[in-house]
Image 1: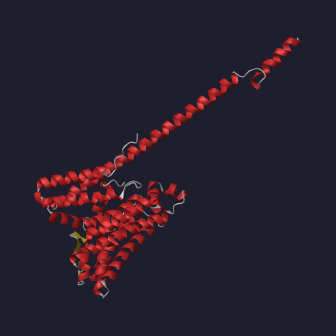
Image 2: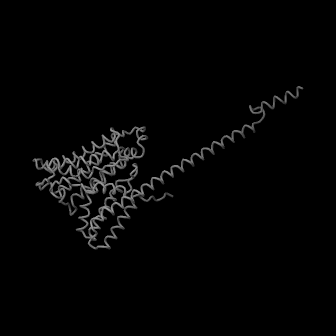
Image 3: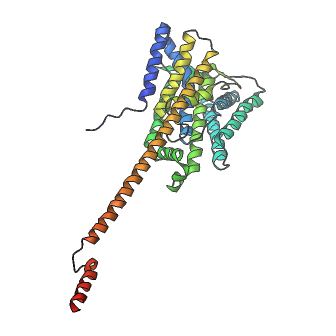
Length: 364
């Protein structure tokens, strides 16, 4: 009989439901349509960042530049439209800028043999400074009404940012879980040397995941700028990058690489947005939010570490069992050969000595 396998995302989905029920009990306003729209709108940027961060974490890396990349890409879009470019070309330029930041990260990490933490932390500072240098730390107003559709428009009552993040989630999930390149991403995160020996181009994969993260940051920058219709040089300088990491880790993506799903990270981002929004609705001071998110990150990392240790212990036990079985099989084979040799009949190689001795005795 085939066993029913519970999806690994079931746990985080259950937590999302439980937290939602608790928030609804504490404040009836939590489940109102207006608040749900606010929750989803505020959560779309974190969702985009979490999806990009997931690809990076799956290879064993980390991207600390996603927050400042929002400011950089949003400001590039605002400056481009101020310079006369149409909104769609400005948006495309912002996404390309995000991708270039990803290329920069990936190249230095792989070819420079530098830790991802150091490279992306440096990029965080660079990306945060460029918008301030370009504008003398001033905001840039956007006037194109078509650009506002990205952040303020809706289709059948569903906000455009939510539609965009859902489309992106489907495409990225298919790419990660249904393509050969997606399999290579997991392979690199599992063991880089083994992946290389299997023919995987590690450099290509590492650069690719950081480019995906940069593109997701670019979409986040476009959404923030189009919602406010202002390019802020300090956008994304808050807790966005930490929320993106928390979302992925809480959703089951391992910090050690090679484990996790995009759906899990997606649900993790919803949980983070749900907690943040719920605390606002029930009137909890904003100072408490980083503390609560920090606790969530610690719990997620603790669970991830325990899961990693459990997997290693299981692997060690399996190796011990395999070694024990192999040694027993070897011993049984040796004993069987000895027994067979002792029982061989006269006339066979094992009985020649006794036959010759018997003949010699008769001759005497």
